Structure formats: structure tokens, C-alpha cells
Length: 339
Ligand code: UT7
Image 1 (cartoon, rainbow, N blue to C red):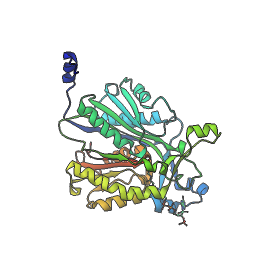
Image 2: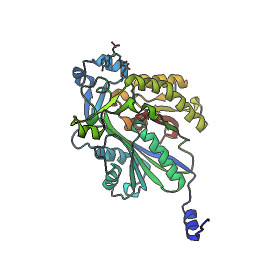
Image 3: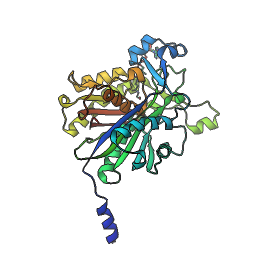
Image 4: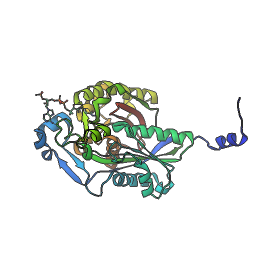
């Protein structure tokens, strides 16, 4: 039996969907402490040369006191809100993508909201390096669906807390930082269809070394993030370029129409291999923020975009293809208009 209610129908009508959404502001925060390769190499029997050659990383940032996940989120969100012309207290929703907020609960997002004097809907996204691109899609759908006008999407990590200084496979890769975007209503389309998915069969390729239950029951040390480097490398190089191509096709955009390619900053060799497979023309700017920022997981795509916009490397209003991929395994890619 169908129950109808005039009040419910009227309420649905009043939640008018908006046709389009766009990224209206972008911001980033890089911790003060610069950590060159020379500080890492001794404990993992490595060299500056090896790290540069195999990953493209020259230095990364590690957060210090007064640079918590919440602090960094706020520092990145402030310039993004300013660019968007939106007050923090006027946000309708806050999505924080992170895997390094050290509380099982509550999520980081309500604490970020509180710092802006906001009582907006606020939740975290746990999709590791793909989390920010998931957040952009979710914000896009929320704005277009009528449940929010302005959404703050933050990608933030303090991975130095979850990285073993003695793990040869990860100690040199990860860094700390935050990137943020505001997604707002728009007169014109600004966020293309997302191609996203997961491959849970490969969940062990990047994961916390032990579960909290194992840590507790077996009285183990603090767990860190472990990675089967070559497995992830192969998956990223051969699996992710086709996903990025599908995002282009879904948006009806060809490579020669792109202004920027902003993939997750996992390894510069992965970035270069993807750019080659996509057949990007030379005049498409390719993000290589990893050299001075390391791999900041959820923060890497917005941090890379923020740098390119700030340095005038890419035109505001132009088109960028962005893709996040990592633990899960999970991935998400879309074409966006550069704010
Ligand atoms: O953000 C989430 C997604 N993450 C990624 O996409 C990361 C994907 N993986 C990678 O970027 C790469 O696998 C790494 C950069 C982590 C490692 O580079 P690799 O070229 O895959 O190194 P490998 O593990 O194949 O090791 C190659 C050689 C080995 O020596 P032999 O057997 O060839 O003599 C290793 O023992 O390099 C040696 N090696 C090292 N040498 C100096 C491994 N790690 C190190 C090290 N320093 N840190």
C-alpha cells in the first residue's frame, strides 16, 4: 500500500536540486618542518640518490607540535574558504578524508567544524589516498541533490605518526600536510562524472600492520602502515591510467583539451608512466608536487592543485584531470574546472 502525505511531497519539492557544482576555492597547508632525504637514509640503509631516482622525492614535511590533523585541516581550509568567498560558519557540510586522525571516534570533521563555529553535518571519509577525490564526488552530488549549498572537502594526513622510521619500503615515502576545496553551486558544470571503485581482494597491499585487537591482545608496539611496494606500483601504473581515461571519456574531454593532470602523488615514476599512457600533449601541466611534499595520501591531490594554482602554472577556469588511488585498494577520478 502506498501512503501519500501532502506535507512530505511539499518538503521534497522545496529541496530543489541544483543543476551544477564546481570547486570554488582551493587551499593547502605544508608543515613547517622540512625533512630532507639525508635525515631518513641512515636507519633504512638507503641514499639520497636511490630515493630521488626510485620515487622522485627530494624532501617531505613532517608535522610538529601545534600541527594536528585538525590544525592542518583548518590552516588549509582558511584560504580555500577565502577564495570561495564562503564563511566557515556558513558551510552546510564538511567532509574530511584522512587515515591518520588518531581517534577511532569521533571523526575529525566535527572538530574542524567546531573550529569554524559551524554545526554543519561533518563526517570523515576513509579511502586513504583516494579519499579527497571521493569527497569531491560526494560534495558534487550533495550540492546537485539539494542537500548542501557549500561543502568543505579536506584531505589531511599526519602520516609521520603511522610510519616506521625503520621500514625500508615506506619510511622515505610518506609526508604530512593538508589540502582543502570548497564545492559550491554553479551556473555551469565544474565537476565531471566520477569513475571510482575498489579492489578489496588486495586489501593487504597497503594496510596497518596489525589490527588494534592484535595490538591489544598480543601487547604489540604501535602499528604503522605497511606497503607491498611493487604490487601497488604495478596496480597503479597498469590499472589507473585506464580509469583516468574513462573519467576523460565520461566528461567528453580529450587530452588536448586538458590544462592539467593531477594524479595522486605516490611516486614520480607512476605519475610519468600514467602521463605517457594517456598520451598527454607536452603543454598539459603535470603535477610533480611529490618532489618537495612526499606522498601525503589524502592531501596529495589538493596540495598539488593548490601549488599549481598559486604559482600560476595552470589557468583558473581551465580543465584538470585528477585521480586518487591507494589503500583499499580504492580509486576515484574526475575532470574538474580549476578554481
Ligand atoms: O600512496 C599509496 C600508493 N602507493 C604507491 O603507489 C607506491 C607504489 N610503490 C612504489 O612507489 C615503489 O614500489 C617504491 C618506491 C616503494 C619502491 O621502489 P621499487 O623500485 O619498487 O623498489 P623495490 O622494492 O623493487 O626494490 C628494488 C631494489 C631492491 O634491491 P635488489 O633486490 O634489486 O638488489 C631493494 O632491496 O631496491 C632495494 N631497496 C632499497 N634500496 C635503498 C628497497 N628499498 C630501498 C630503500 N633504499 N629504501
